[in-house]
Length: 334
Image (cartoon, rainbow, N blue to C red; front, side):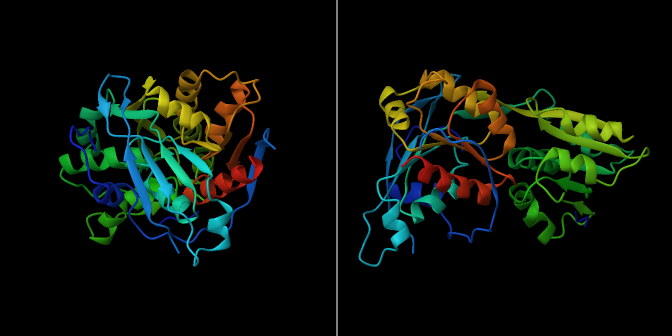
């Protein structure tokens, strides 16, 4: 451990979509070990885009999902790109959060279908966040455990006048959301990142004692692991439900058919697992499932709880490990 878009009624051009969703250079992938619960199914290419309708749980029309198809391999394409030609992966995170994985997979020649299954809404305690950040008693730590929690925190932090606070983050993706504010000097207080990106490790490693005050702005649906664990160590923990997620409940039948025919479906949260099962109508015991690749153990447990076959997840949560298990799932789904 170390201390230290909304809905659009107009049609976007393919260039705009590419810039907005799939921008950036393919990062190097760290070596990872992978945990497998069960497997029941035996230089970047240009990307073409098409926009297909999707309705949210609230009836709003969202842009997407986006079909991201890698261009046919050229003579200069790598063997890896040729290896994955024609393979399809479904990306199910909230709208605007699939760009990194999109870039990584299409660079390998893998076709992607972005079908958001989750949408984010304000939580009951969102309006209380700015005042809490300025609590005159101060905070030993503010714990941020997901990229979405970090984005909502920054909104409240700006409204609060950008106070300097000691922040503990879970995972590199979460820390990246805050990085520019450390670089600018707006945040200079101590930071903490656990050795493994999960709440269990944070509970064990975060420096707290009986005098510690911890603010935990989180999803209303997040597990109670963190606050209960830190409270058991003597800390006083204040949890605020600053946001929540809702399942998308209706998808164009043609889009769903494409998703069901894909090689791999990815899950970034237990809520996405529930939404997939409700929309797909698949029997967990059936043999016609795609393979499933989860971002971490929490989503994988949700799959295991309902008996889904072909579920893989990385030992260390995060996009690097997630990409690795997507590739392993593609191999298993051959």
